[in-house]
Length: 223
Length: 79
Image (cartoon, rainbow over all chains, first blue to last red; front, side, top):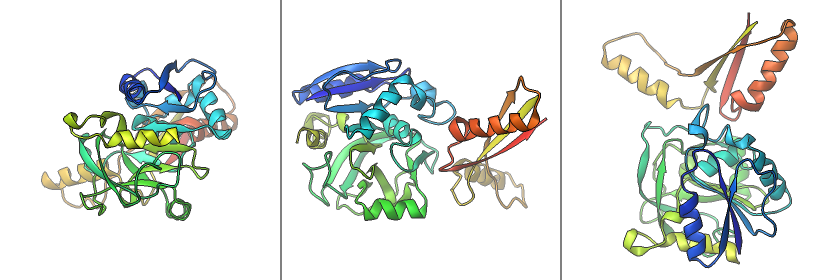
C-alpha cells in the first residue's frame, strides 16, 4: 500500500504517521501543503495531527485552503480513501469533507492521556479489523476535540452508521471526555471513504509503550 | 471603510470559555450576571467605496473563512 502523508506548517505527527505505516510494511510519501497534486497510485491520504498554522482563527481553518487540499477533495470525491487524525480531523471538517465541527474542550484543558474507545461501526474501510463494541486503548492529545453536530446531522450519522468511535470506559460505556455530542471520538462521511478521529492510532503500535491497538485500526486500510 | 465582524458560537452551542468566565465572575462576587458569551472581533480595513458591495464581500469572507457556520453566527458592521 502507498500512503501520502500531508504536511502543513505546524504539522507535527507526520513522522509518527510515516513510521506507523512503514512498520506495517507500506511505503509512504510526505506531501508539502503547496503541492497541487497528490503522488500517483496512492491507496490512502493521511492528514496527520499537529497545529497547522498555529491553530489561528480556528483549528484547521487555514490549512483547508492549502493548494494540496483541492487535490485531496478531488481525490475524496473520486472515492479515494482519506484519514484525518486529530488536527487532520479538524481540517477535514473545516473543508466540509466530514460533517460537524470540533470546538474547544468543555473543561478548556488540553487533554493528553490514554483513553478507552468503543468501536461503534466497523462496516467500513477503516475499522474492519475491529469488532463492534470492542474497546480499544488509544492516546488522545487535543484542546479542540469537542465534536459538535446539530440534531438533524446527528440523526443522519446514526442512521448511516457513520459514527466510528466513542470515548468509553473499559467496558465500552460512553464517558464524557471533552464534551463531544454523545461522546463521539470519530466519524466518517456518508460514502464511507473519508474518516476522521481525534485519538492517535499511530501512537499505539507497541505494547511496551502502553498499547498496540492502533495496529488493527491502521491495518483496516489494507483490506 | 472599516468592517467590524463579530463571531460568536450559536445559541444553543455550549460556550465553554464564556461559562468559565461567568464562573470566575461569580467567584469574584459580581452578582447579577445571567450569561457570558465569548466571541471574537475581526476588524477589516477595506479599500472600497460602495457600502452595499463591501457588505456583500465581507459576508462572503465570513461564510468562506472567518466563521464556521456549523457552530458560529456572525454580525457585520460597516462604517
